[in-house]
Length: 396
Ligand SMILES: Cc1ncc(COP(=O)(O)O)c(C=O)c1O
Image 1: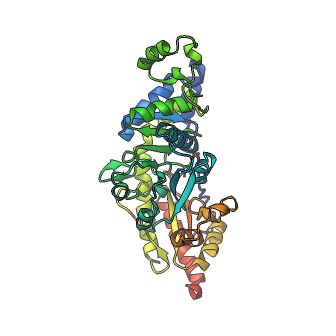
Image 2: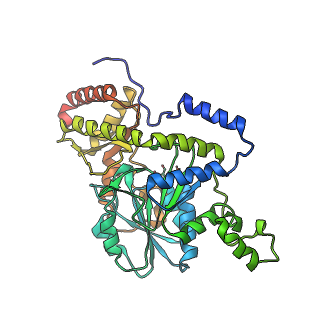
Image 3: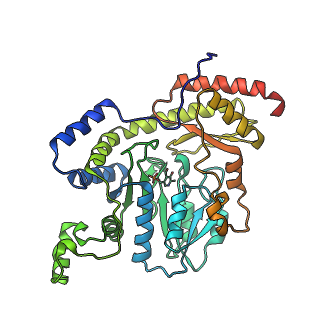
């Protein structure tokens, strides 16, 4: 194998010269940079791609989750002691948002097949106070959402699908993000497509959609579809309609520039996903040689987010990460590992066991996957693994 270390970063710039030229041209020809027609167009085009009725473009995946939780508690008038079921492995703002709204996060362990909830445990954590299940489709693996819906049954529990790292993953050919009441996506760089910063709220429910429009932009009535304007003008004749506030809100709007980029990226998204999945299959094939050392999960309908390593022996995790790093390959924890180990979450720590989250925390890490990862890099990785396991033979 060659000795020249390859630079294989976790995130790489996927915005090309053509897109930069499109952005420059847009800047030169528009007089409107804040949310306007390009945002609307991006939302419509995204809805078509995603297969949902409504989409609301915001400035991050975290903001999407923020307004989703806020609108659900307003819309369904959750009591102050409402509980929201969350996974122990997800992105931190899913949990922070629950806490910031004074709701109680109820943690459930994950499973090691699709990395969503341990479904048996999920069923036992539902109480009379449960108002939402905040599910994450983790690292591109589609969760068994049909099973979650069966567990919910006829109970009035909202189902949120955090799809921030699983764009285009499918269940029986249907894109995830279309099974629950509402879903979120992130377009942060390093994700399947990017608007630099950005996120989307998706739903088929017109009430949720209207609330999302209001929450995104200060609670302003003028954000609602035009067909609703006359109604509110008549209802509140003594308030200037342009400054009529119907609910509490935030300002989590995005810009026209980001929407222009979103439109160009969306055009290429299917190709990006295809390449990521090809890489993932090849990666899993490489790991097969060392199947005694690795857990090698795979699920039909995946939209690969990253290339994850799950070492059966935790003592090999750090040495392998260090070895890869020395050879130019960056790595990081699986999202952030078991979030209950984070200092600020200590007071929410339940005495129960979270053994799968602990396994992911202690035994897992991932390297980047994107359209620049190719056979050459994967062969390089394969050679490195051979070298690593030769050197660590006694420890395996
Ligand atoms: C599962 C999950 N949820 C939410 C987010 C938040 O998205 P953003 O970084 O756009 O705020 C991320 C970000 O990576 C994520 O991975």
